[in-house]
Image 1 (tube, rainbow over the protein chains, first blue to last red):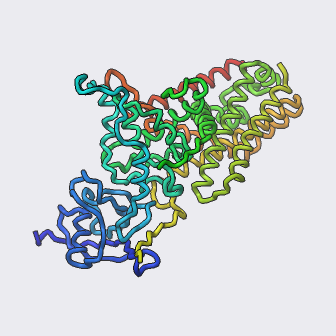
Image 2 (image 1 turned 180 degrees about the vertical axis):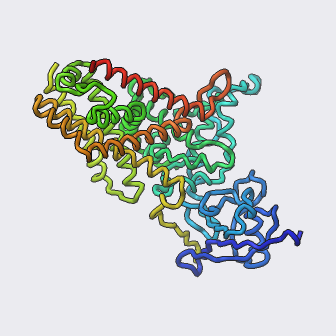
Image 3 (image 1 turned 120 degrees about the vertical axis):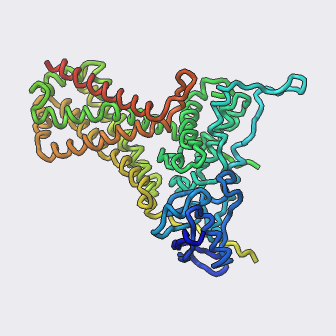
Length: 251
Length: 122
Length: 132
């Protein structure tokens, strides 16, 4: 291992609320091997160079969505981004953009959690079924309609990619909309009309200006931009047709 | 606990933006090429393509009127919406002022176009 | 005492931070050309409504090299708008299912550009036909 070992510079944006007025850059010399991710580089810093460095991580395999960071300015999961791809240049690591920094690479995600709750991210049954009636059946086509949007791991990279969220933190944002859409287009769900109030509101979809970067950075190919923009059409239809449709109509 | 949500009026402006965006994407380049380059330079098209007689006849036709109004008005609403958002994007949150300037300009342009088309007659 | 003091980073100059955002600002900027071109057409329409002499003044004005230069720039800008409009289209429209399979992004963008090319050709032929 040691013969393949090289040393890379990792520049980290540090911020300790007890003593720092503003964040500052700190550069670490980190020995690394070809198989090491940026997350492992940051872990090396914490274990051997500066134990006070704070960051979130868990699964190390792009499933848990905890280790999102700005890596050279791009929202990335640090566990699936490799140091070898940056060497010999310096790699810049920063907390996810557009979120308040709690400490070092840890962001404050309270706003996101509230948004996630507000979209009612669960199936609101179209028809209540008793146990005797059996399970809800779904065809492969019906599964296809929402499967992509159900792949979201709540990593918030899309929020760090969305300038409109950065400019207006109240914007419901790409990730939450992708999940809202996931339930709306589920054949078992009947909550579309209920969720429309949020979609069509001033915090809803119309902050989006179709930048599209959210879908570029999504590690699970959820395409949140598509969810947001399809719901612009839905909200516009609701806006113009609300006088025609009977009260409570889903359209 | 639920926040009180206010319905956004954005669909009106968004729909006009989308219609104008689609129209300018489909026909914008060719229109610019015809009216701004080919006709003034005498290329590609007959010399009298945009003669007074031709344009008067076109603008007196109902379909012609509709086409002219759609092009001018929707191009303006499309551009107004984009420019309004771009102002916000670059940090000019002029709010009501920027809104009036952008959408008011588009509204004024639409009214002028409609007025001219009526003045030209049928 | 609560030691939490979340730091909110400024958004100043965000569009310069990433090539993706620079491109976004450029394609949003094409709206300036769309607006200016609509303004020129509107001015022409106002002249048309005031009679032949006024119309000819406007028509002659188009031959001014500055106007020609503007229209060449506008042609480039609005063509770029066309390209970006259809490039973002797969993200903005509902999925198109053909034969049980989702139409790929490239097919939607390519289809849109093909429709734009066809519409432009029809427009050119229609103008040519009416002028003859």
